[in-house]
Amino acid sequence: MAEIKYEIKETVGILSENNKGWSKELNLISWNDRDAKFDIRDWAPEHEKMGKGVTLSKEEMIKLKEILNSIDL
Image 1 (tube, rainbow, N blue to C red):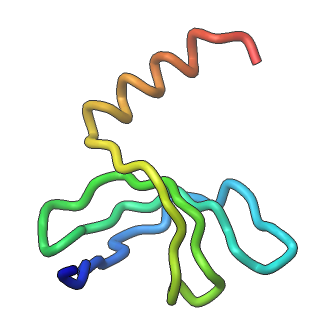
Image 2 (cartoon, rainbow, N blue to C red):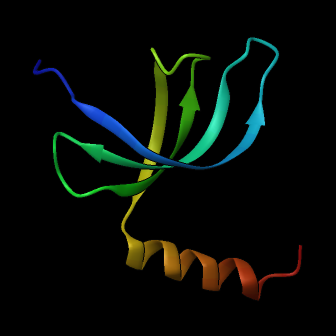
């Protein structure tokens, strides 16, 4: 399997942190030298390991924001 390259361009925010030091983060990440996209996933303390996550384009983030703003939390 080919190595996956990534570069965290911006940490937008940390959503939570577990007792092992891993944090669920919203970041702008460039995967394999492509344009950066929004990404939500768990990260080890020094970003040396990552969990499964979801990557969203700007358009998808705009739609997600609209959906979240429309629900009563």
